[in-house]
Length: 455
Image (cartoon, rainbow, N blue to C red):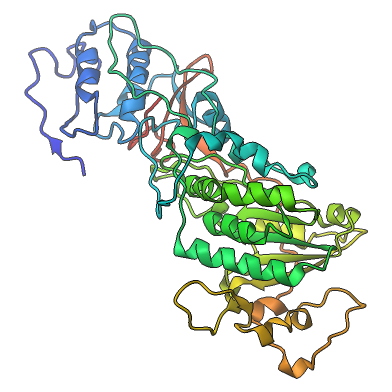
């Protein structure tokens, strides 16, 4: 934590009423706040009649370095209380596309859990967008996340004012330069659950899957099932070093399973879609934190659209029954307020219903209910076709979790469109409407900040 150091004595004439417009409230002695001394020096060198806008422009040049930790303690509210600079909000993804994926935190590293030790050819990441482009279900595909890999900033924040020198900013690096493939025990189990479900569904061509799991596990589940189902990404945000949604972990999982996805894409002849959602997409968040709001509303296909593609049933896959009820954005799709002319049967399926009773030294296949015997009763628990006739006595069927009996009911809180409060970032805006800097860590509407200045 940054420790405030008492400021040095003020020079004569710098007190109230002396005409000195700015003063340093506190000095931060922390190596993470590179450029703090430059910022103070730039202020001290200004003439007593200097305009606030000149100081603002000089500040922004240091933004990339100051952004990771911030400018707490410098009385920023005093500096930006003039009528020409205001705090506003912009769409987070729009700002990332314009100023870079790490907008507001240039140079702050991403943190990865479970980095893979397998050989990794970074140049292969260039092919990930093509690998994940569906051959049969491209009309549903959301390419936002794969396309972030090579994205360059489209613009730069204003340059420093004449006569001031900003510290050197860390060079911008694309996500393809910093992403590392990951694999975790949770991902490996989700992969085996995907394999198990694909095995069960191999002969049913009118079935689709919507997997709503934490990003890395969702990718792993799809990798396990992609021999039968075509993965269709619905991830609609970009990673950020301090993002509310840790989307870089999802991208890292895609990097790990890229060879698997590429191989099965060339072998698969099925058009059955498996839609991928990150369950963390609407994680709890407070505006008073220093996090970057990269949350989003799902863009899932409507049931009527799936019906037109001859889909009769949709399995909504969650981690466990505790993940129900479904989030509002999906409720609006799976339980529309107004009945649609063509309907698709929707059932919830929990991955916790897949397991194994075998004792082995390594990973073993998972089964519905834990064994080959209970696995065979899956379609007794999940019939979706009126012509389906069980081949086994239902008394032998595995007693599936409450997820199998869950009913999707329309909720008044659900909305088909993204709420205005979701996926926004606070920014400093000049009098002309030009974005001057990110303002992470906004404290209410009083122009106070705890950090987040960057280019």
